[in-house]
Image (cartoon, rainbow, N blue to C red; front, side):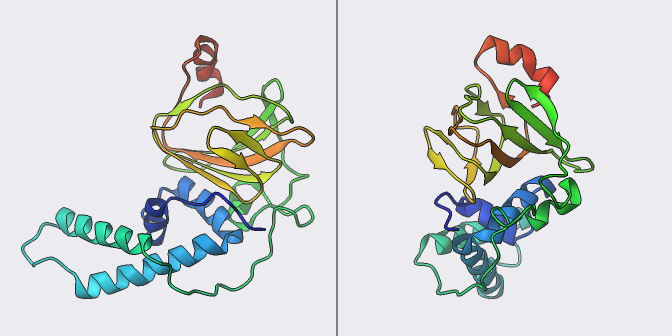
Length: 224
């Protein structure tokens, strides 16, 4: 598996620093399981961060917030440079191997696709909400083939990892292993490809925004 859509550098940096919310970190870890490119960038961020903490600390009088801002900016610049040569160990791609869900999802959704207990959400759309996540929304979606989702933007950040099937939108084609790392500037309308349902896992830290009146009316029911 060779994903074409990756985590944003700022997301990778936050993951390496342990600064993502639980829900975002779960989706990021799911992507990292099968993406050697992003695993290498996380290792770069950890390496750069260690060097910066050791060699580029601001003066002792600088406030903590300013110190963190300087370190973060320098780390992002480092991630924009040529990647460090890293040879991460090979991983088994869980998306296309038997019935196994990716390991980071096991505590929240179980280990098996066949054992998932989907709940109807809308015609052709089913979901499962993870219980016990503390700061935002974590859910799995199963969207029937050839379905158009409502046009929407995001009140905050959304991370969506494709597990099975695929969809396309204005940002491109998203297939198994790809991640959509979206912020409040993005408005899109995912359309699933024909032939097979699209299964994905998403983390949201704020409600979606729907321009259409019908979707707005239904939003409290869907709790998205």
